[in-house]
Length: 194
Image (cartoon, rainbow, N blue to C red):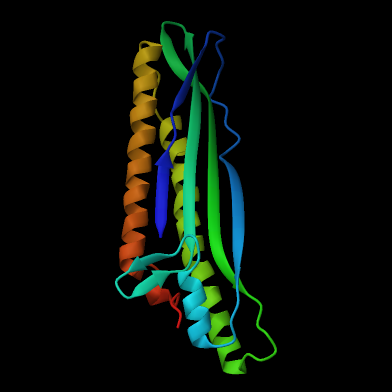
């Protein structure tokens, strides 16, 4: 399951000229929250997964993992020699992932433990795919805005930067949607239980 959120674009103006746009690359903040579930049968675990606070139904299937990402960016522009150019970029990405966690009780059958481990690995792989799309989006915004040439005035440049960043984010939101459609929200990757 996915959800992205656009955060307000912050544009700054500086009057000190410089030679090139500064960037240290996107700052990426990852958070993984585990939700403990219990049970010693396949049915009990399937029922527990449906009770997760982020569980979402799709037909007869439930999504057992959730990744939400948020991008923020700011650009500093400066006037020099009759034009305005990008002097620095700051991009921040927050990725919040929620996953189920099961500690197998001694009464659990070995086949159930193996089934769960296979499912948990596939689910993490699917959610990592969402994260990868987000990280690529952050890098692409930095790359594409860094290639925007100077403009005759800073208002024009700010608009160009904003349009490019917004369009890039929309493109990657579409890619994330396609990822879920292609993988059937992780089902083709084995991220279903039972």
